[in-house]
Image (cartoon, rainbow, N blue to C red; front, top):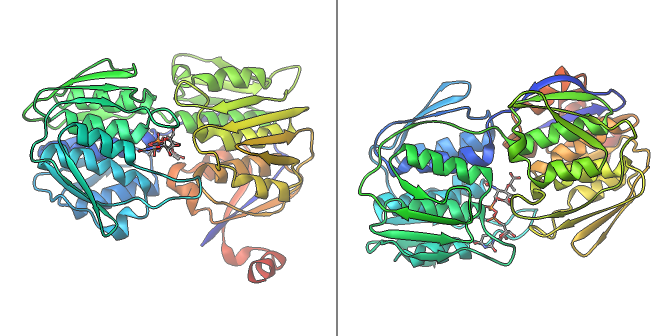
Length: 435
Ligand code: EPZ
């Protein structure tokens, strides 16, 4: 296993380029199953989750080839309707196979996604959407089995306890595009990743109206063709670099970042004393404001609200901002696994229900910490870059799932971060692991 050693104290300065969006690329990989023809996908990030998804598509019969660092060619000429547990259990996003298998084959048999550290990951809304299209779902032996012989258009309301569902909207769309008749999806997610999926489906010949709104109208077609599609840049990666600039008091040109994808994030950064300015249509410049950082109050919400995937990173920033910050999770109320690790670094945070109360102005000090999920990993690295001394981060495979060459890009910006083997952990840390 590998670990990161992060040495704090250097300001990050320079240019970095955002990779393609993981949360657009994963449903888009699944959507290629809707046609037996070849699709070419461009600007695909170099992530372990992408390689998992490619493996699953191969397992069900697709030909999947990586053409170059960011381009993949997928030909699902003959596929079967079931996916293997040992692959699916590794990645929640494999639930996105449901929609295309139902649309193309009228049946699916997918292992239920396990929970994960950020909280329960139910799929009740996914199954509700498919049932409104005439599909019959049963749970057998940990698998969700769908019979959609009578698939037809229908009216779906996708609002749940925490608002809409991103991958649930993707599944409803991917089943509806091949369902005879009209489908209306109300309270659909309108994250930029869903818009990107809609554009790709239109490129395959799907008929979709209302793109970008919470109401999507789909006219089912008999067949879809292959397509060539370039995936949008990753807004969560872009936001992470903006916070990296602020937390180290540097200045980063984030190439590829689209300000129109940032929603409430840009507004909240402005309040937090982080200046984001455009440097051309696809480049953001992030730095601290001249009068310095300020405390922040955020509530995570569906797009265009503050993204839950940037909450942990904002929490790291609030540790060094003056005053009291309050970060409330409305999407995943328990998404605070990064907090105990930041406390080890000297942060002053208490959890009250689904809120983290952060007393800022603390001087973080390096410490051995454990990554627990993708975004917590990034947050701990940001905290380490702002801390005094060395921070050793273990279980960094979480990070590699969703950040493309994060440590390499940080080094290019002047960050002192090294990817090492676990055996190079200080003896004291290795002792601590054993005890
Ligand atoms: C997507 O997950 C993202 N993953 C997540 O990013 C992101 O945090 C999340 O959307 C919210 O923005 C991908 O796109 C692959 P949801 P998804 O269904 O679709 C509840 C990352 O770090 N819900 O929008 O699984 C659910 O419990 C990952 O990149 C139901 O109640 O999230 C949650 O509270 C983490 N019933 C809320 O809705 C359902 O059937 C939002 O979940 C489905 C969801």
